[in-house]
Image 1 (tube, rainbow, N blue to C red):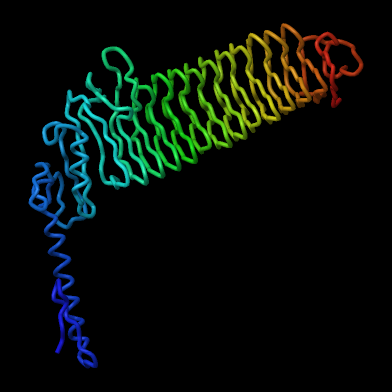
Image 2 (image 1 turned 90 degrees about the vertical axis):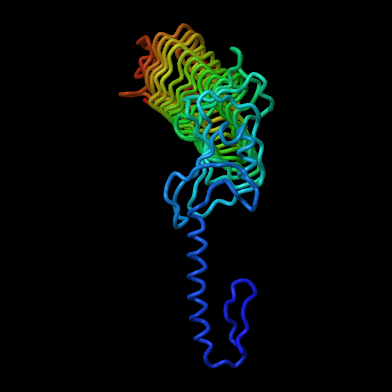
Length: 445
């Protein structure tokens, strides 16, 4: 005699049965029917009656008769008073396979409470709004508007949060993810006018292609402690401390607008940074990296900064960069290595390039109208120079404290303002008054 399973009554052929295949085929028929019934049950799904608990009306916007596609919308405040209440309801809900949930912030609604979640999966949840921006209420409380931590898959962010309250930037952080959590921010979305935009830490991953994290009191983007950030073409301009701050992390900020910040891009502690075509003009310091950073800032625009680029103990690629009106374009220190091929620098208040404390600079470009020396090598540093250095207020090339300058001559080699007859630099068109040295100057003529 065949026994049956407890839950669904599937056949269990007896020991030694010779017709076991009959029971097996019947089981497959039963499984097919049970699966289809479960999928059909999803067709009437709404966030209404769940295990006898009423958690909101909602609406099914597309066909989910097979449980494979569709979306449900919960409205705030019509369905739930606050976004936090809506997330509490999500925690009590198991979405059918293929069904997504939108939490829609209705027009004119300001956020009243913060959202803080951990160890949850909101991968099929999206936050969006009817208005272009979502504000904070005057009595909003909380250090972080949205916080997701401890292996949390955050919802997709499709809102632009505006933290300005009564004309002041709210002292809250827009978004914070930590401890191996993940988040995606849609194009044109993010946070403005807060204490900070987004903070990713402790191995988290955030994707913010063309996102907006500008006009913050302190930091637009903050990626630290082994996290990864992808913010190509994002806007992090007008931030008081840093447009993008990267510490012990990996971050791509290619083509990012980091203008008019305290520091446009800042990185330390072995970070890997992609910053091609970044624009840091008008910032106090355009790019500041130290302690083992590797950064590719090829084609960067670095104009009207107090100091364009500061490098300490780091590797920096500035090939093709453009700079005008900085206090100093490059300050390379502490054994850094900087590549400046095809760089165009003009109208600095001080030196065009300063290499100190054993750093190495490879320069092939143009420096015009430097307020100090065009190139200054000091403290055992080395500079390989080729290109044009014209109309410097001090020396075109200045070498001090045991440094070495290798000035490549011949056609297309180093050219300075004056043409003199000093034998060692005859083919370089360098006047003896344009080069001063307490180190060594090699010429390749």
